Length: 87
Image 1 (cartoon, helix red, strand yellow):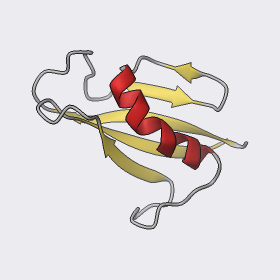
Image 2 (image 1 turned 135 degrees about the vertical axis):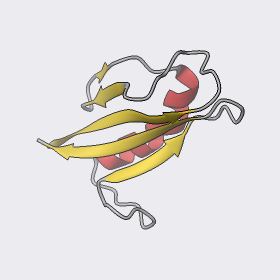
Image 3 (image 1 turned 90 degrees about the horizontal axis):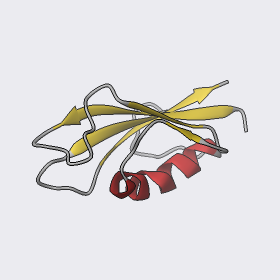
């Protein structure tokens, strides 16, 4: 594995009960998670993070190394950028 995945909060509307704010960053390296993330968002993001760690490219992504995903709270959505960073 020669990459890490950086997840950054790009937007947040309403009131996130976990407290996510624009600019928050979480880093996944395949062995650990650095940063704080709520379980609901983690469960939604983890399949894409895992896939990107192993080289998956999503056909709808304009940049093969960047996708976006929202948390499951429709009334207070947090949008995360998921970015593959080569080491």
